Length: 294
Length: 296
Image 1 (tube, each protein chain N blue to C red):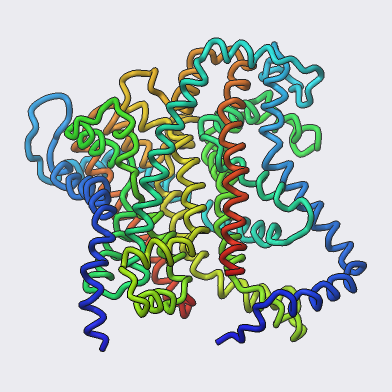
Image 2 (image 1 turned 120 degrees about the horizontal axis):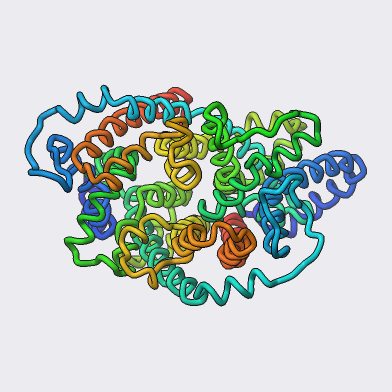
């Protein structure tokens, strides 16, 4: 019985997937595969291309800028749990039918739909020494001096994390809201009839049924955090010094700006291995977490 | 599993209405606290935009003066008029629309067709495909950029809109999102289609696709904003700045007129407005899709 089903679905399944998988093969798989031979060469715009073995990899770990960029990228993971926690809370907050809720949802989503160019420009002005943020902090008595948020190496990376958080909250809120609304309201109604409190309903209905969404959102935001690029590309270009230099930005500088394709590929592979390790941790965590309701 | 009569509105509604009316008085403090939180959050998320709007409406404002001007003391549209005549906005909006439309259609169709078998069919290699897709999500986009550029030039698609859209015609992320949505649909629906003798394509297009409208709306929404806002890849692919989408053009504006805060603020507001308007429309569809799926 089961065997027959297996056989009968194969043809339609592959026909459905063929166009999509072709695009994935050319633009997702090929770059990965091609970057491996590329990483073993000194391919660049200058000089003759030849096989250099593992030279690019030994060079990478002696490259102070690259090591710093890796540290910054891994440090950026701090943003993931904060982002998930606040976006789930926001989703719960906006998952009601009170008048005007739609306007609030829209307001929270606007930073997401705005281009990083616009966001960067705005926050660059707001966070300048004479900017609105310093003005508000001084007026509230929280600080006496004007802080150069993006020009000080002590704060720059954390300020970029804040911008990532600010821009990303609405996005994850919307995904969690879709999750919340996929939970049948009968469940809540039954729980209310049974006398369950709000906290009990969140704990025993919302969180378990939201689990696949939490897993999904954590995974993509984790990968986004390690690969973070736009924020520093538009706002700081890695500065001051190397304070906000992340691995993606450094790979871009090596590959696109300086056209060292071979070396950039090697750096990319190292970062991929690190991201892979983190994803495996998240997958394990999810599996240990119990039954996937889907 | 569920008694069909429980789904019917007339029997369920009056009971719930009565419950709400009885507890309205008790709910007022909770409701007030909720609104205060909602408003504070709205100020946090929208404040920067409102400030940018006020800068754009006050020609001659210096954003680096202290104390900064937060609220508009006068309103003039000079910045908008000047920026609109300096930058060919309708053309850049047109370019952005072509790129965005092409990308949306490709992404929706390809993620619907690729995710469906992964969620609903049993076949050899399904878990392998899934594993490969998962593992592709870990590669940093900045290495792919170089190879994508080479691939697009091999296809002779440099300086074309297709060249901008093709590398992102379908994403693993969208396939996953759609797969999750398909998995939420009971298997009975596909089985009943099969019993009625419908072809696999008809089952997919006429039974399954209408049921995953919320997923389609989410993908439409996310892809719309990602294409509308992409600035790096278009600059890499396009040689002709006249083909630039809005976000790429905005970086150009920012570089050229960094001294003129009002112009940049006005240009930014102009670039943000269309996407907000379309977002409002898409969001309504998105919510309808969700409630439709719940009702259906």
